[in-house]
Image (cartoon, rainbow over all chains, first blue to last red):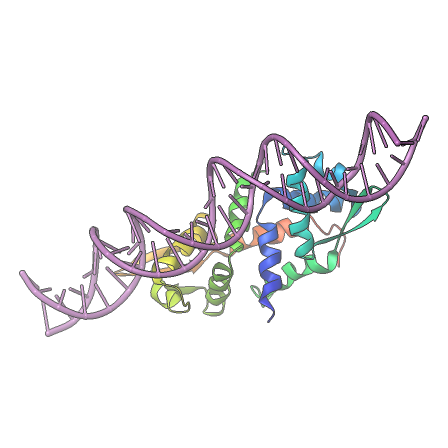
Length: 94
Length: 94
DNA sequence: ACGATAATTATCTTTTCTGATAATTATGGG
DNA sequence: CCCATAATTATCAGAAAAGATAATTATCGT
């Protein structure tokens, strides 16, 4: 019943750049440097930093620093929250 | 590759009231009158009207009028877009 | 210590979203 | 026709999000 976490997760998924980050992270094996992520977009790096924070506050990614680079990791456990929510919408298979 | 529809769907899901509408519609068998939906919330009816329009523009619901009441229906085909998106995130089962 | 690189934080403007209230449209019943 | 009901449209103020730019922190190599 803690809907706050759902609020954050779905708010995080609302922006196309943030969804792109998750998908790309997935295809890169779940881990990428911040700069590598930022270079995917037209917008400037600080925007990406902010998107990453939104994703992290939603629990969808986490990060770890090694020297001056920060590596962001996908957090599959939280992606499953979305599956859970969707699951409410289909009691019998489809 | 038409990401515009994904943009609308995920933006629609970003608001808790709109997610609530979808869930409730589902449990009510997929159809409810606008007033019945509006009465679920603290906020005034015009807010609900707007939420319903956002959901409809995302293709998640549609409506039909009978007399002076409007009945909103869930559109399961569009809910599946979310499944599709999530599906990208897990190539092998889980 | 110095300069280059990686990344974040701060700040500001513009746009979009939310929520409230008032006005409007349209239908149904007497 | 008149009044009540169902619902939407219009409008406005405040909150939040997006995007750009500038400044800052921290680390690496020399």
